[in-house]
Amino acid sequence: MKLEVLNIKGESLGREVELPANIFGLELNEKHDHVVYLAVKQFLANQRQGTHKAKGRAEITGSTKKIKRQKGTGTARAGSIKSPVFRGGGRVFGPEPRSYGIKLNKKVKTLARKSVLSSKAQEGSIIIVEDVNFDAPKTKEYIAFLSNLKLSESKKSLLVLDTPAAPAVPAKPVLPSKTRGAKAKAGLANAMKSYSEDLVQYKSDVIAYEKSLESYKATLDTSYDNVVLASRNVSKAAVADVRNLNVYEVMNANTLVISESALTRLAELFA
Image (cartoon, helix red, strand yellow):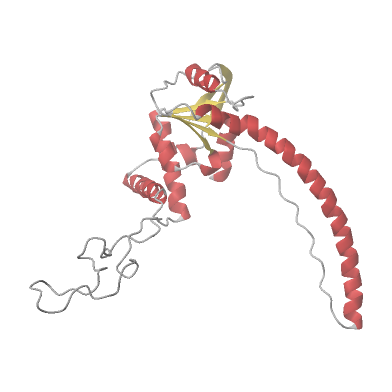
């Protein structure tokens, strides 16, 4: 399937891109419906904090004295004031903190993502745009962007972007450990010489890393952070990083807007 590429003004750029058949061209059946159900179930379950807690009778603060004599009261025998039958007592089988997380195999999650993307492609609900960059996080610019693509604010849209990769942190060389013996000392001298050379290289790598980090932050601001901030005040618009794209977000959107770089990254992730 081929789709034309639009710019942020909604105009055609005169070129088309091919949607990868292994991602957007699956023949859907009941198996795909089930893996999508499992992925959505996992996503929603993982949203639960699981911090609920109620105190049992052993955790209640209260007197340990027997509240009344055993016999002769005409009522049921009772010992602790912390008993669940009394007001303010402990709770029987109350909720405990727990994780609601569900484990899914990597292949199942991959198939679920491919399934929902194929479903959107079959529905004709995918738009391909050039890479989106905002100089400032302005909501009116994002609303104009949606309007140019003929997307209504009353319908849900999901913009998928490819965030720039962060530069790798240079690894600090490890100081050789001291050893005993003549041969070991000779080896230690060579190791220390190598260590000093690695240390010099490490310092130059750190300087280069700091420079690349500054350019990375500037690129991240214009290509992702500003777009996210601009869209955050539009109730039915969402922005997602292609690396963190999940099934629930894709299914929840009426229209999927994918940038060119995100489409390329998507093909690499599912290759």
